[in-house]
Image (cartoon, rainbow, N blue to C red; front, side, top):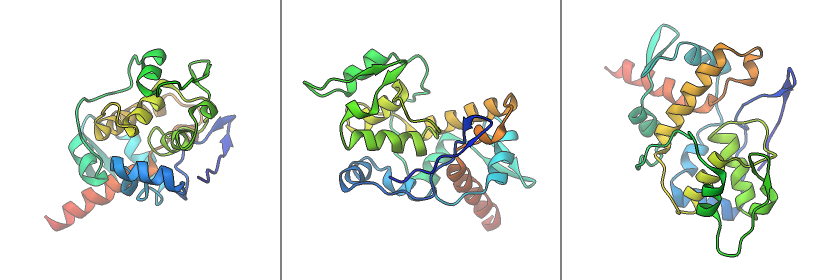
Length: 210
């Protein structure tokens, strides 16, 4: 995985890497989970469009270039192709110890650091997949700790639990939109560029064909 990191105002810019390169083992896991096609569609983006959608985001739509863009769990499931299984999960109040118990295999030991675990103690390909989750799903700049939300998504990849990923992505979009309103450096907040491009392209195509 090649990840390009930048900083502005002392904070990591949250932007999906332009190149998705994973090991064969990681690719097999992502493909089995139904994530790989989506991750490969995130490389093209437009930061101006992403900013506009997030600034105008309402409960189930936004306005971009004067056009209404639908933003719902069902639309995200359609444009991403990600599995929309239950239960819906929004990352709230997940306890680290509980998630560690779900993720860990028998005999595996994880090292806790602050509010997460050290990536190196996950072993491969899980440390690599943790970076992939942080880069493309939660879209975070710093990857020195694997937090409960990341560990739970890795547990999904291990098929130890299930998550409605489109609903989670929708929740994350709204979290970013709320953070954007109070951010000093908006470049460090705007994320999910690739997902936003998929949503805008889908909505415009639907409007043109109707």
